[in-house]
Image 1 (cartoon, one colour):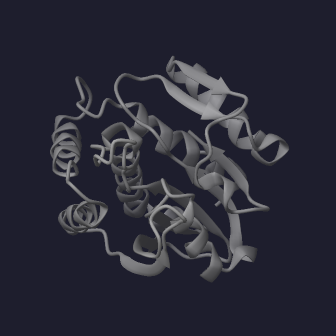
Image 2: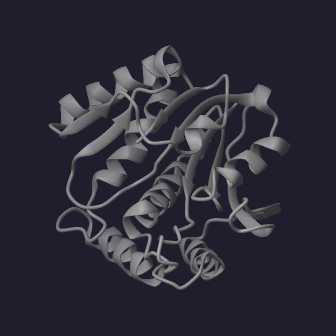
Length: 235
């Protein structure tokens, strides 16, 4: 994949995020699929959300592997977690696409619905993976989609995945976190020079498609803080 094609991955994923979770336009089949999956992801625990995602991926025809790990933090104590990893394409380098599927526990102890943060982003990433896999014969890089657990506890799932990954292969990372309604794309500038090419390409995409895009000098902490030394974009 040439650099121009590599950088096009970010607008593809973010364009899918810009579609409403309850879509009012575009492809009705995709809209219905996203809406149905988002509704099913409203569960009472993250393990239950994992089961919904596994069933959704089976329906989408996307093969995946599960990476289990021991996580948790000071508040929760030791807690098992599970990442979902989708790999396709071939090449000497990897493009990594990440989104966390876990939802947060609120201050009153209730389990949040986690639709905006981050069922919408997770489902958008799955749609991007499905689209890219259909054209994988045109890619010169291996694609790794990592749907992570325990992001809300401190980016734990992403860190656990990176521990076993070959970091020398990673040439770019696209992270999607928070997706709701409308067509406004929010993206961070945290990574400075490392994301210069991705930001330029994203802004070009936004201008060419008349998409409203809002940049943030400091985007809230998310999975893009984990892989060091790669070109990164979060949104």
